[in-house]
Image 1 (spheres, rainbow, N blue to C red):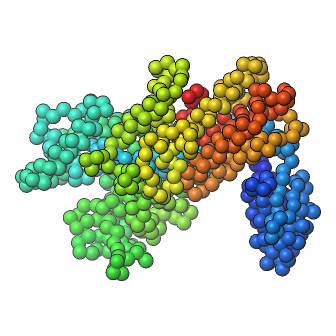
Image 2 (image 1 turned 90 degrees about the vertical axis):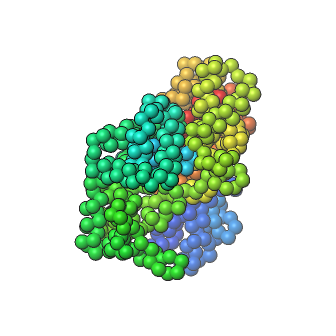
Length: 594
């Protein structure tokens, strides 16, 4: 746990202590309602909220609070809120404390919490497409943030590796032995995708092939060795292809995180039997279903959750229930997150309800659907190719890298070809991921690659440029005082590399930047609670904007004296480390040069 106390937390504590002194005992715990303000460093509105209960005018309460505040300057304004100014020495001492802490003063409020995050979930033998982008990127950011705040996070990639479609594909491969699909690297999934479509077409037009495919499903489910061998090859080749995409996109998921539907096959019958035995599930028209109170169709009829279908096959609900039970029993999860698109909201509501009633999801465990909106094209419709087909995820990544290469090559640079390729890749992935993450998770957003790769405005590339600019300043500062500043130029978190003089006055832009940096921990806690990465994106953009204002107003390398210069270099270093850490938590690289 960090020893650094955020300035806002100190202000809240001081105002609350003062409120406790001027209010009746029963109101002693009144929330001070402190927030940043453009009229002062902070504004406290708690006096307004408590005035009615205290039967006093807000301005009168505010005046009494001002008289009891210690270490802060405050004045009553407007109807009774407080404008609060913090002393410069507190600002500088907090900057020094954050730089001296290898975690920049970040706390670990999630320590001891076990979290399972289910995200990405592509299908075996099918290419990853634009529909997998949001789950992969959002889920990965949440994994990173929760882990950084101390949670014990288990990543799970619930891939679609079982079902009747595999009987069809395996039968087709058996009847077309001349077809080559294994060991083709990046082309493997394209080949399999094409073969799946060919198999589907034959299944729909040739009744005899359809019958042979159904027989192959039976063989697969009964454990036929030859059929299982082909199925295992399909899964293995698909997993390799998925890992290539994850590595390129900078997603943490790897081979150890695959959690296929097939893992739960042996549990499904038991799930159904137990639901029937306890009366939670009933038979309806030959199927086994559960119902959730309040879930009805357009005409008021109850909507069923199908656990077992009429033909005896198991529905997705059975697999999800078996999966959820394992995550509680085996992984001992305190919190289970399903990063799945918003269209599945009703399904998860009913699954969670069924699991609660069955006793598989205790009240002590949070199960949360983390919904997200759709990726749209510039025409405002779901993103498709010009021919109306689903866009391959690999093609999106190619487009982003091509666009950012054009931007970067138009600028003067001294990069080698290899260095430029590396920056193009880092910036291309930043463009795509930040464009997704910076939007409110539940809303749709437009995939506009030209806007994504812009080097100004609220984009991932702009933040990378802001970080590189800070590092450039630190390199120049290091050249002027190498013994003192060399570690900082490389992004070191070495304690007290540059002395901070807390007795110096702070320029308004220095103070504004320092107070923005001071909000990093609170921002991450908000992200972890609300599961909204866009809050971190907005915060990092605020940091970059505050830094630009500071740098425009306060010369760093040509500061009026060594002490001022040292404090400003310290601010630059804390800014660089905050940007780099924040970008990393979004899964975005922060190059030293751009």
